[in-house]
Image (cartoon, rainbow over all chains, first blue to last red; front, side, top):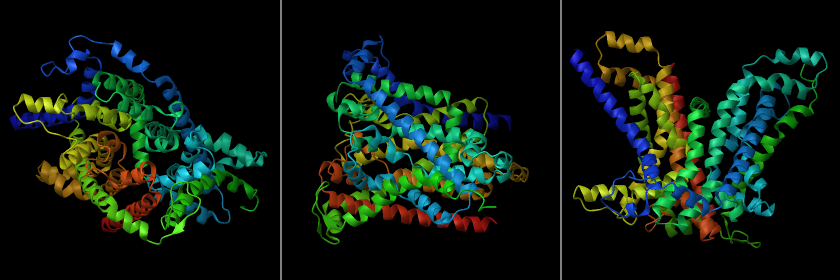
Amino acid sequence: MYRSRFWSRALMYAMLALAVAVVVFPLVYMLGTALKPNYQITDLRASLWPNQFEWSNIVRAWDSAPFGRWFINSVIFSVGATLGQIGSSLLAGYAFAMYEFPGKRLLFYLLICGLMVPFSTVIVPVVQILADLHWLNTYQGLIVPNIASALGAFLVRQFYLSLPYELGEAARIDGASEWRVFRRIYAPLSSPIIAGFAIISFLQNWNNFLFPLIVVNSTNMEVVSQGLSVFQEQFAINYDLLMSAALIVIAPILVVAVLAQRRIVEGIMIGAIQ
Amino acid sequence: MVGRRPLAVPYLFITPAVLLTATFSLLPLGMLAWRSLFSGGVFATSLSFVGLQNYSDALSQGGAQALRVTGIYTVGFVILTMGLGLGVALLLNVNLPGARHVRAAFIIPLVVPSVATALIWTSLLAPDFGFVNRVLSAVGLPQGDFLSSPSLALLNVLTFGVWQFFGECVILYLAALKTLPVDLIEAAAVDGAGPWRRFRYVRWPLLRRHNVLIWVITTLAGLQTFTQILIVTNGGPNGATTTALFYIFNQGFVQFNTGLADAMGVMLFLISLCITVVQVGFFGRGARRDV
């Protein structure tokens, strides 16, 4: 009995270790290649892990492309779009949960229909609309189309439906405006669901590659992911430089992922409950 | 009670969300359907009506192959991500001492930028000096060409997609397993059911609704795979890894055959919609059986 339990445990640990190794190995390989001296990369007998660390590779990669500018663009795009998503979702979800008004059902279905249209299928007409607005290659062109989030509005609505309507009555009797009731009483209560939603939105916007790719084509408006793909075209077989660049791009998000691990898990789960 | 409140307030509150959804989701969908019936470039001012010509052109000019590739890719993607996700989630759910701490590892591929991981993947599978080919040489096997052989290229992109996404299934299945009633599973154990029978006859039926939900999520993710393909294979060789979405991108923004891109956009939208409706139908049926 004990013996079979020992072996089954050992087997489970082994399988788990294998799964973790498969997930982590590419990142370790990246780190090893990024820090290798150039002559070791084309040497078939050289080990995977460098025997001397060539930190200057990372400096060379950073200096070979405007990474600083790309990071600033990524921050502006992702923070802008995420704040927009939070604001518009809070307002709409609150209104759909708390008020009765003519056309409510129709407008709500309109919003949910938006959820059913995968953004990627309509990329061509979206670019045509942005071109008509002269918004190509601008921050507003990147941010504004990403602000509406049917999922966010839906989540917020579900949350407020569970709260009593009477919560704001005392303030209303004291003469507070509807905006004030929302801003001071209801909005702060939503912070637990907004936190998970915010981190997932932020990561999705940060990692969005297709959308900036079709909206922006001047180097100083590109976001990090896009810049990295251009970098790849320029330094196709310089694996030390390529992996250094990948490291530069991955490192900040890895830090975010480790710090906000629990929130990310929450966010993935609330995203799945549609 | 309702009439007391200013009527304009709710409309003001919903305006940003509704207006932007209409402008950047519903209007483009309408434009897509409308313009798929006309010929003319992306910025053309005069359009000529061609009926369903764009659809038959798209299908005959690589579109049919793109749909087939999308089908193969998505089926493989769904089976592998859900299978691996459930397997790892079951292992993590055993509560082995120390295993709790590795959960975070499975989130990493999900959250780091896919362009960067695609670069890593490219160098892992590169000819000559890539890791995989080095290992193959070291053990005396012939090197594989993971970019110019059609089936290997598709396998290359598929493995990468699965590596990147299966962590989402791990998280979702882990959460699902935690919601299952413990007493039911313990009762089965007391009755002498081994781990496999407990899974097959107790957990698996209870997971039905979660399965459908995760199935919907992975299918949509599989259908929308893009970055991996652009960076790793650029749709090649000979369209072997050109999915429907990649076809839209390529025809719309590289070849400037907007009509073909629009026609494929409509087809991809309808296919996604049909699949989701069928899957949600399963959800409803499962719900009724549960009650």
